[in-house]
Length: 317
Image (cartoon, rainbow, N blue to C red; front, side, top):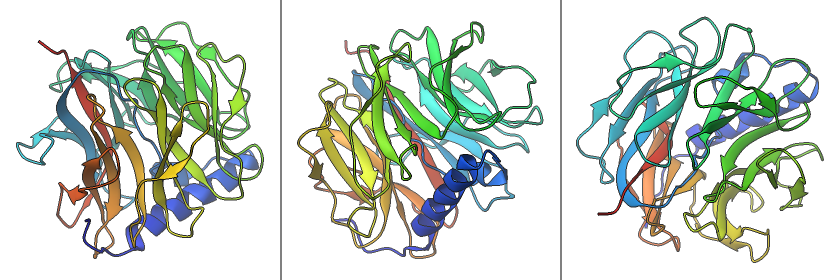
């Protein structure tokens, strides 16, 4: 069982995200977007590799991307600058990481090798706030959230930064993640007044709503076989992790934590789930559990925030 931990960090992050969504609905995206953490990252099949994540402390601190072994050991730092580097997402072959950074003066989509080499900006100097990147299974495209204009929409680009394509209308859409076969994208939308989970074809067509309740449902992530979607919800008062079939049926609660847990993503072999929880001091930490919700344990433990994890898929030999 995960030991009881304080609730300040998780409550703060969810409150910030809901405030952001309310602001987005008015068409005025502001600095809250830099603080809220809501992204889970696509799980592609393979052997379990390293876990990429973000480490930082407070809204004014720099955010840097690190990787670690699945037990929290052998920490490696991939970025090192005064900017905010955030939302790392592995490619399906485990060789690349897409991420967002404001090192150019605004949040843009970047890409680097899995060891931190060859960091390159993919999107231009439009001034838009772009974040939450997710690779397609082929590695040919990257979906992301675009917060420019009068609301947030989901776009995609080729992995070299070319051929921008708008996938949704501008309203309040976020958290895109491809299905393992690349045919669909699961995402969040607040179009009915509260965040719900939707799915669409990868070209943006045939949107379909999967959850429908008065709570906030966040961060959908496909299982590596594409049969299930894990997500988090505050429908029971405390934010918990749930799973459902990929068509939205058979919802089931996986965690029964006394504190908020959120941002879940499957391991590449489908046997474990990495997620975030809050420590007694209010900081966010990373934990793992079995895919049935049992045997949860924290793998980071310090006084700063660790969040936005993505599990590296490795080719089986």
